[in-house]
Length: 208
Image (tube, rainbow, N blue to C red):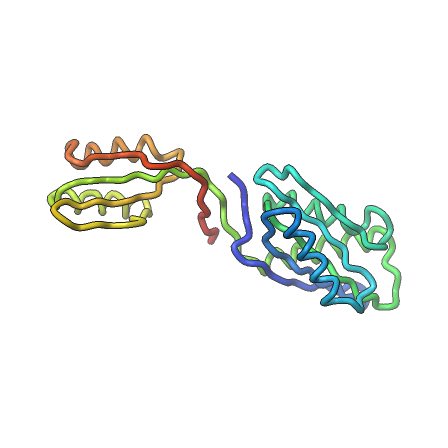
């Protein structure tokens, strides 16, 4: 289970008249991240620095960062640490710096780049990638009310509903709740619902 970006975002931080603009975007591959970084550099071509960092893969298998001319270790690495510590994966960030005329020193740069990324992430919409199991439920009209009540109690909605001679529902359930879900449906319908596990996969649950 890991966090992902549902939407990108942009945030800004100012330190001694230097502007730090953080642009954050979901990226599913290294190629996407590289293209995003290049696009942002072209957009802010007149800035002194466009530092970057990205994390690709659900377990953070691939990470890269760049100081883009700032003193080594004062920009890219702190930015990457914010991404890693947030738990967000498949994401890239570019922090654009417009120099304000006052040198910040290594500590000031680390603080500014760190805070800029936090501001950028705060402007994004996030979700959690979770393992799930898709079930197909077939039952008669006498039992459907009990099943819908059970789904509502669990905060679930059918992915698809078909009403014919019988009722068929497709339901996505968190993987850790799958066994309990089968048991509850069986008990609620006295075994009159046919339950078939269709597929297992990851799905995104929006964070509030």
